[in-house]
Length: 361
Ligand code: NAD
Ligand code: IPM
Ligand code: MN
Image 1 (cartoon, rainbow, N blue to C red):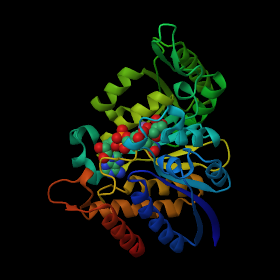
Image 2 (tube, rainbow, N blue to C red):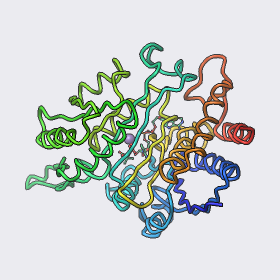
Image 3 (cartoon, rainbow, N blue to C red):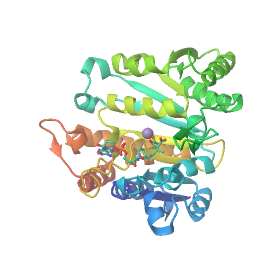
């Protein structure tokens, strides 16, 4: 059997609940496809702060580096919200992305036919939506310097972050995006704020130059404010979107809602080499944590992305994705995607039906 070492980072809030489901699914898929997973669990986020005093212990980063792939659930919660930014749970996640140099974040937003009625938008607007957001993940305003909270002589505080992109950073994410577009409908929309920001002017120029290497891909540019509007107005105009770290964070949550619930959306964070991190787009959902209400499907679909992009096991990935579709066809729903006439399931019950369905597949 093919062997894989997988680091699991359950994190905080609903993280451990949805991670349990995804691991059960992976165990069954492993049996079916003769893949042997060696799971090792590590601390990140609030859980790491409580146990080890820091959001990303070096042991965690080392374990991640020494694995074939990392499956992360979510981090964060009210309890840690008043800590300084470098000690918050979020710093653990950002440190992990930076530490593994995961500059490319793939966030697919595809409407499943079964969930069209769960979307807050009309059927004719969302039917057929299939968007890939390629978000730059280790640069931009999240990491630019100077950053910090500074006090002036009058003791007034000034919060500072810097949005910066070097051409080399734009080029490497641009290449990932053009390649991704090529495997899809060959249409790439680069989203920026080049009418105001110099960083976006450099972005737009570099992406435009890069397009010469991809004559088969149709490139367009859009300002981010318009893109936010167009995503809810007429989402089907988009195929692949490439954008910076902050704009990608915001637009991918908006794109998530087109598909019914943020509880459905997976993501893959990839670098030039080394293990990728696979995680849902959503957070730790502290408002429903510990209540067995979370939708585990984004986590399960993140495990499918791990099989596809991290371990090169497309058939196993297909099996997981088909299982999710089959569950939805059987009218089973968690609260976030519930609609009249459907069967309401908790997180763990959803896990059980996933296993049953996958075993029969
Ligand atoms: P969130 O995504 O955690 O929750 C937003 C809303 O969506 C909530 O009402 C929540 O209940 C719901 N939701 C999210 N995932 C769900 C699921 N699987 N099933 C059902 N409902 C779900 O965003 P937030 O409330 O803004 O942030 C909460 C915490 O999560 C913060 O500490 C934030 O920093 C962190 N966060 C972490 C990640 C991550 O780990 N990648 C991503 C986003 C936010
Ligand atoms: C995400 C999250 C993170 C981000 C936070 C928790 C650091 O919102 O993965 O989308 O902003 O990238
Ligand atoms: Mn986000």
